[in-house]
Image (tube, rainbow, N blue to C red):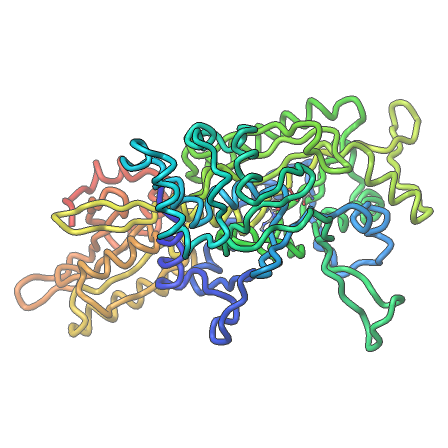
Length: 534
Ligand code: GAP
């Protein structure tokens, strides 16, 4: 698995993702998509929309406003209960999600160094002495308040499992705290301060509409796109005459005042969601929940996510959101470990009923068969556009050795790849080659995003395109346009990113051939027109 630093560095170097406001020192919780990143993310959103809206009879789309009536957030329960517990360090001022503190300590510099020391020969021989020595040397810098007298002789035991009660006991001991209700832990960042008792922190980002900042004008930037769908349920039903079961899909920005944004674009305060609210007859909800979990799980793999890197995780009862009866997360093996990519929840009739009650408007469906009004149940597949984009990036990353040199490849599915085709003239001083290559680029662009590049040697141009995941390169050479010795053969070389194999194809046939290549038929085309590797 590639580490995140490599992905962050490639993203910056090749124009995928930049730190927000970088020239002012950057904003840790926001990222900007560069020229290739915007193509990549747009492709993810485009295929999601096509597969979930255009290719289905039972789905329609919506694009609701980000700012909504403040009562929406009272009715939805977000004002009262959309919060995470947080704890903070009195010394360095860093804040943490209290429910993720064990992970934060486990991954802290001081804890990793301490752990490494315990693995070493000195600690195996005399743990007590090795610990003391560590406290006086490395520990002094990394965790100045690491207490000398509280480390048990058998510390090595609990370190094998972060959830082991003995481990928690050890951590408390390290912070001189025996009270299990008190966080009491040593700060993961500075190793000096003690963490405060956990308190809830609202994740809602407040804003004020209009020139006067007073209670009457206060609302929130939406923390999920879902509520825009619920409040429009009746509008869509009446205007589109849909019958149950049917779904409404929406892609849009959401905002959360996350306590610990991080891991690149994985957790940010501003992000994009791709959500579906699928309305079903009560009683058929569990069956639909399973169907939608299966469908969404298959979707990621259809666009190249490797089966070994994706899994489903059923929520325990105590993890469920206030509106959910059940939830299955689709998790991806990100560089920092298995983490949520998408949640598929059974939201029951909670939201429609809440909005009916708070607005006084009935949000119901008339069932022609039973001649009764019912409140539909809702299954909600809720994906992150940024997290999906990150997963596609991480999953596509490969390093290979080709003729003694490192080749970095982003092995994107052609539908996801930012650039589909790069046209490369073999000789940039030959006017006929350049003219033909530019004309070819202009023609291909009408169907696929195609770029022209003549700024380096052909080998280097191939590597550049490999690194940004362009599935096919086309070279125009002397044979294509002809010279004094031979007439033009009107053919070009198409090179496949994954195999580095090449085929020679007549320009007139190119649109039909490219269509097949984009559909994954490289082997067939290679068998017909194959040449060699670059
Ligand atoms: N409407 C349900 C809902 O919002 P969620 O599990 O809180 O459920 C759904 O969010 C998805 O939105 C997540 O699986 C993730 O992909 C994305 N997401 C949530 N918070 C995020 C954040 N702070 N940064 C980036 N993506 C986030």
